[in-house]
Image 1 (tube, rainbow, N blue to C red):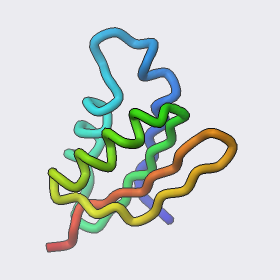
Image 2 (cartoon, rainbow, N blue to C red; image 1 turned 60 degrees about the vertical axis):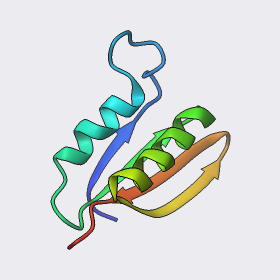
Image 3 (cartoon, rainbow, N blue to C red; image 1 turned 90 degrees about the horizontal axis):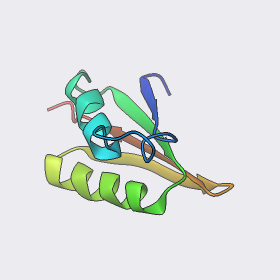
Length: 79
């Protein structure tokens, strides 16, 4: 699946640049229909991304969990 990718592995260690802020910035750069793949090992981050995506009108295309890490694919709707 083409598109952008964002790994939130170090988001908990960086002061002032939280995981959800990174997701918002990345989504602001997406073209309509373009997916963003988000990788995280923190369950709370995955929950926050899902909740924010619903509220922001993004589509959750796919969600998988492998080896303690979540992979979420969201995209800006074509409309």
